[in-house]
Length: 337
Image 1 (cartoon, rainbow, N blue to C red):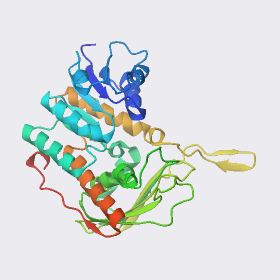
Image 2 (tube, rainbow, N blue to C red):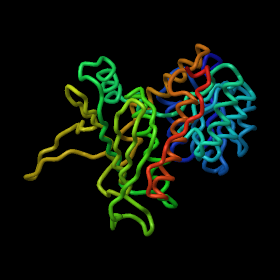
Image 3 (cartoon, rainbow, N blue to C red):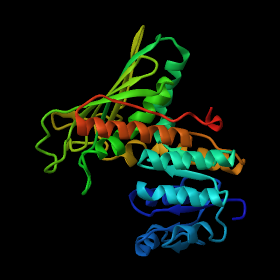
């Protein structure tokens, strides 16, 4: 047990419970040492059958629990800033689910706090960087065989939106993944955002502006468009096509098993992100555990988390105002260069 990295998991909801399972059953080199959730019954259910786990309702109590050496934040976004700063104060390495902090001002405070430490403690949970298809596309674009990227066409569809999901959340919750993926794939920063939308789908809850079409301009002269449709009804789909000067490449069409029976042929469509990206989540958490045990940090940084929050915030303003909104990033601290 002493050889395993003791992790405090903050949040035992849908995402947190899945990470608890992953740390206990899938990832090597780590164990769940503590869990914090406002609902202790939910936390107890998430850790049922796992030995040596303490359950708390307060973040700081979990961080100070015996055996805690690292933190995995899977609580709702508005709670992330306080948790990150508490982890920094204790020198604890962190894997923080996106968004790092939903608002750009809070994200900047976290960025500056880590920069003052003079060392990285944070990996942000943009798991698409660990997906096999995304990694193949990244390698293809980096080697230059298709020439300069001109456009990225992205699709992000969900079966249905959860209760309380707002029109702004289509951008700052769903499209935030495309924001990071585009920055990473292209090696470019978004400079402006425009949002256009059709008449809302009849399948969307009353008042929800769904779907939306989000367009990013970048400092490298590329365009990125994202169709986000969170009440499509039929499945979870994520696709990305890079159009370059000498060719194109598309990911997200891996259909898996083709079943033919009763005069019809078809494939299964994943129902949510935990199915579609299960391998990416496994690799992401394993990479974090391995780096943490070596005393280092890898993967998306607090700068990436901050940049995604700034771009998403500009996107929400573009949705509200119906105008093209410029992206204004703070100077990048030397720690993240």
